[in-house]
Image (tube, rainbow, N blue to C red):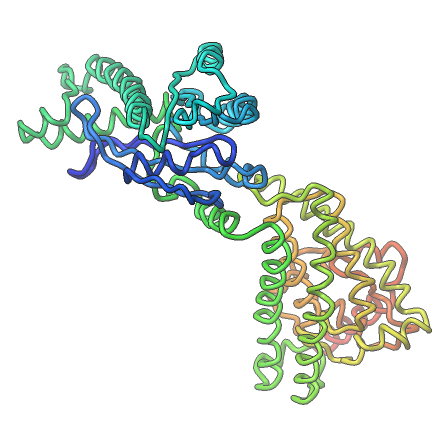
Length: 508
């Protein structure tokens, strides 16, 4: 609910239409808002809405009607749109018994996602098809009475009871809010202004306007909203998604306009490519232009031809290996419980899962990497990655296709075990890409994470790995260094680092 802040309406109420697919929700919406009916209407995809302004007991009310798709596959998507609804029309088809039997399921979902004070009316639609009836009027009334709902039989084709249904819902909502507002005014009338000893009388906005008292209007509007926010938090609703966070609003758009497969596969691929190249290409520029050379770990530079070869091969591998791998992984993630619907997971859940992914990825990657450094596998497969002894950001994913598949398992095993929300999977992918690009960037800056996180390897740690022959490489970890420390495979790096530090001390 929203009080009028302009001259168009006094209140804005959000009402949702729910029920199985094909019961006539979209035609009820079009009949009420546009006085139209379409025999050729198609199933709603995602969510549609329309508005209509009408009078309720002398007040101008703008009804905002949301038509949520009835198909089972869209139910998780549309559940996010129950938030903020103050009224609901639960529709079934009197000619289809199954749609009536599913009313209780829809009612449970509504009560799980909507405010407890929501006004609900049950409507048996298509009363014009009385000769095909499979649900008696008495059955509908009995169920509605049992569940404490209002009830009407309607016909969008004949425009029968459509107006009455919405008028009844809006009137009941208005009565609830009027009682709350009156209670708020009575409570406010007993308040004393400190130091004044006089009561503040909260008047109706129209009275305040006629007296020209802006202060009274402001206090009336503010206190009534404050009271309603405390007692009816979900009734404060507007059309734009400002009630939800910016992330939730953007996510609503994505899940409404794209399928899970498109988001999980194509969306993940596009996100990966954007983050990877945008974070990796700057290091090619730094190397070519000679900027920040004092932070470069190795004095040697790669030739432009070598850099271009790397980019060309990467594009080939990404489209021919990475994209098919993402598509093949989709059924696994779905089977393990991956979801994309709202609500989004909490930051605590996301943080815990991503930390788990980093730990398990580091463990699996370490052993897989050590295996790749055995003589035959190194010469046959892993030597492709070590073609660049002086790595730069993009070399992080420059590898033999077999290695991409082999070590790619380390990246997806964590998400596959937990079945995360898709946004968690995307955040994990972004962080993993940024980490591996940083580890291969060839620069050790004062602001590098390894200077602040003791267990983090970073560029200096991994650059040592690229400078040595496969038989003496060491430093096999991907992100953290504890596995190399436990198994002693970082002794060469520690020794070299100690010698450098001692040499620098002697020079100073």
